[in-house]
Image 1 (spheres, helix red, strand yellow):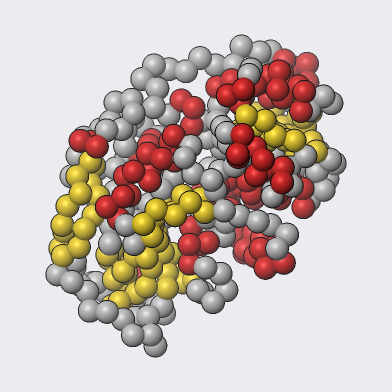
Image 2 (tube, one colour):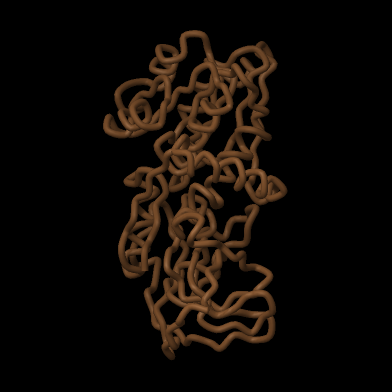
Length: 340
């Protein structure tokens, strides 16, 4: 058993102070000291080592009805986290074990053991369980292979392609036999990363001109699959380039998350009639049955070096909010991680 530190009486956490309107502001949040509780029956106390910040968290800051409960005002926010158990009152998990759970945004968390998953720090870096081998990785895997019904020979377009999900979508598509993979990103540096390191066949900077024109140039024969992380003009462009029986998997719409007015829909939806195309939204939570296959297949690609990944690591829980806002701005390359 590993040596585990004695937990302090109090620890720091981030709480939602008010619901943001438009772009979140620092005054919408509170960084406070909170009591570190002793775990009750069936619970463990975890000292968090890495925290995840993700675009979906912006939706939980709103009170609007959604697929997941909103964050409660005056209480610690939640998100993916991985850390070491320092006290256990549950069978099957011991002090010294490392676990993945969803009580992030804090230094210490009392977690129901049934909501914690043991992870092996020897098999992969702990931070990988929040990204490439975690929720974002499974999102890419399930969205491409199940929702978009990817098949060998498909031409694939991915938006937000340098992010944690998008970069994995493109690489999985290549590893599974895509005929062509195209990505869009928000800087020339990220575009270079997509083609030179991640193996995309083509990529473009969406800030350099109309997305529809750049996509047509990058995919002159059209696309069979579009994996949408962005929405807006990217979705409209993808519909315009969609081939017969094309599929669009809608994962996110980061371009409109901070809008105060409803975003206009694509103007060319009628084209789906002509292409017999389909658009389907999905949530990773509906696809956890794929987890064992995902970990086995993607874990092997990571070990062999066939699948590459980047992380943007921000040091210190005091910078958790800055890291989250950075994700919304697109500051990250790959998964944004906060190291405590």
